[in-house]
Length: 416
Image (cartoon, helix red, strand yellow):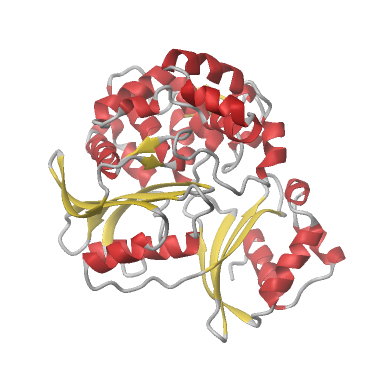
């Protein structure tokens, strides 16, 4: 266990999984913001369910590549039951501000692409998948499921924001060290901690891009979307080769999307989807002005899919391969070389077998949506590869442990 504030809190969490603590002992370990969203009674109830499988032992702990205030851990009971634990400390203290405990499923070792595909199809009603070799400017498919079908992406849309930014930097319009000030009007909901920064404080474009990709910081994404301009991101979508760029026009910010999904009435959402592009642009301006505090109050109950087939960011596996190809090219050019490092801060899934020299990753999720997209360089032959898997289910949340295990199996098979 690391001898750090995050390590000390993780040790307490592990002890609490083995023996349910008293209410008086729980509160000092959590931030005020966390307890406002998750009442003590709920924490005790959850701890009681988890403790039924005790005792647990720490099998592995992994510091987050993006922050020293985040730890990822795998704990396992003597009976073999395992949980993934993700712990995040508050921005300006040592209390827990985020805690996620989910069942861990060991990935299946696949013997063929058919076996990989069978495992993926069992996760959700709508599945898209593409494994491909990168040959110059082309994606050469190795295996796929519905490679031309657009699905909801969640935060994987941020690849298009990064691509638009890189295009402007390549043209000389902007630089990685350009300062951008925090604007309260551009603050969004988690994930990410930049929403806590005071208005007026400046950070470089490079820092915003790192936070947007590595920890999927929504506030960072919305600041960059504003910085490069909505039209520039829409142009980047089309220029990347997206088969149906109209699906991403207008290109909403996360704050606007949260406002539509959490605050708008069903009739308002239907009206937005039915409107033409110009009318939707006007509507987005209004939705973007709604208060994040109202959205945050409703976020804890955001557990069922909301119009994921019509109110989302959309791309097919082939579309995602094309934007990753573009970013791969940007990483090989001096002016935009930081793109490669930004994409590789967070590998998405640990590469325990050391199959890859390079892992670029962006994923996204919301109720009913999960996407994981990779740019990879295989270690055994230096071959550049692409992998994406997307799951959509209009009826309920995706079983993320099973989905991630299936994705892990696909990436492991590709790396052989």
